Each structure stands twice: as structure tokens, then as C-alpha cells.
Image (cartoon, rainbow, N blue to C red; front, side):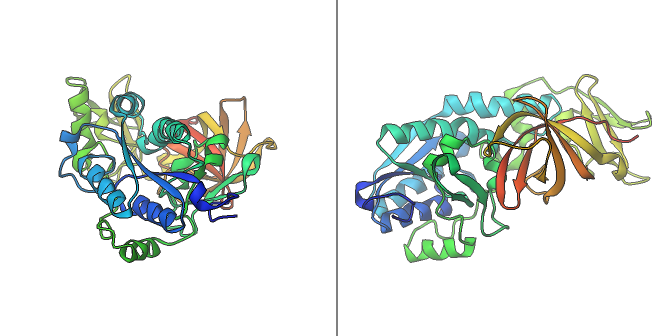
Length: 370
């Protein structure tokens, strides 16, 4: 059995590598070539080249597509570029924009994996006769078929399992993640060993279609005239100030509220119907339970409820909770200890130690204490 857990000689096994132009996917491709697989590099063009030329720290953009092509040329493998700009705009960017105007804090990276990369790219890989789609994600995959499991990366500082909770069982059976068992420093060493030009390329930081991290500018461009002013209101009903659009705020935000003086205040919730930003003390951020929609489970046959750990943001540590299954599409999550700064539109991912059980998209259920 070879390094990807497949029977047969690697030279007879075709592998497609999803290449973003970054060091991680480039090393994943190089390792597959080194191990003798029949490798094809594939890159998705997801948004307008003109918007991204010269932009560093993104993926699937002009410079990054060029970098992916250069790596494939060096490795001596074919490189295909698939134009999914229209699909990406509809499935990811429109959802991102709509969520912000509904007072949510969206996570487009999860949506991109869910709606584009692990659906359309995976289908194309199968059409090319590939036996697996390899990515540079830092996660681990164990088992095969109906028993396949998704786990956190060996290096917790690089773990990307939160962003892959929406992966289905059949998709996971076709995917492989060769970097999940190594720290990032080892990946950089491999890149230098293979003499890849991207060896020192910085990691992606911003949302790929948001230049310089200014998502408000993107929203204004895509929805001109849609920003509406409103009041900044304390949870006790007192109007403290005025804002120029709820999209400038997110739950848990403290800085940049424009209402100086007095006790520290945080954004408690956003009310798109009244165009109000509700603020209050930190204690008012406490959330006891949430409801999830569009749930996806990678483990079958749960007890009801189950005790597990959950993450409500990619940057938050896991916290213990009880998960109640209400029907096939929604669940209720009750935190053993109140969680702070829970934002609608983010994902809640459930874990059994290192294993990803599944998750869903957050709808705040209980009103914060007032």
C-alpha cells in the first residue's frame, strides 16, 4: 500500500493536486511527484484577474495562478486552470455580501470549500481519471470508505479542520491531505529541498477576494447605496451614537465603535431590521446556547444528546457542550460554560478529541443577558 493508502504502483495512480500558488499546495504536489504518482496540478480562477494582480497573501488570483504554473513547470507535470469565476461569485461572494447585510459574520472560506473546491474541482478530478484529490490543508484523514475520519492536524497552530466541517463522507473518501502530519516548518524545508520559488512566499492572510482586508469597500462596490445609517444603542435603551452601516461591525467588537468614554463596551448584536448596533458590557456577550442550520455530520449513529467539544470561531479554543439533535437539518448546542462573542453566520464545529464530528452554521438562539 502506498503513502496515500491505495493499493498499486504509484506510477499507475493518477492524482490531481489542488494548487493555489502557495507553499503548502506546491509542496503537496512535489511530494506526490517524488513518490512516483501520475500528478496533475489544478488551479481554480475564482475572481477577476485585474482585481488581484499584484495582491500578495491571497489565493486563486493572477499572481498566484502564475506561481502555481511555475511550480508545475518545475515539477514537470500538467497544469490546468479552471475558470469558476461565475460559480464562485454566486456561491461564495453573493452569500458573503448577503450575510453581512443580514447582520451576520460570514465565513467565505468554508463556503468556498463546500460549494466550489470540494464539489466542482472534485468532479473534474474524477473526470480526469484521478483516484484522489490532494490538497495542502493541515488536517489528518484516517480510515477508508464509510469508516473514513477527519481529524485535526498534528500541529495545532496550523490546524484547518474548522474550515472543512462541511466536507461530506464521499468527498472525504476521495480527498488526501499529505501535510496534516507535519509542522509548517517542515513544509518550508521541503519547499527549499525541492527548490520551489514559493518556498519563502508568505501565507495567505486576507479573504482572497477582499483586497487589503477592506471588506467594507467590497460590500459597497457590490451593493452601491445599500449602506444605511443607524443608531448605536446600549442594551439599556440609551442611544450612544450614530453609525454609517451595520456592516462596519461584528459581534464581540470593542475597538472602533466611535463612542469613547465610560466603561468598555462591546458589540452585543446587530439588528438589521432597525439598523441598530446594540452594545453593552462584556458580560452581556455571554451565550448559553445556539441553534445550528445546514448541519453536516461526518460521524453516523449519534446518541442524543452527545457531549463533545465545539469551536464557534476558527480562532476560539474548543469548549465543552451538549449537542441536541432536533431534526435532520438543525441541532441545538448548549454550552457547559457560557461562550462569549458568538456571531451568527460563523460555523460551529463539533469534535470528539481530535476527530471532527461535523457542525453547522450558527443562529444565536438565546438573547444575551441584559
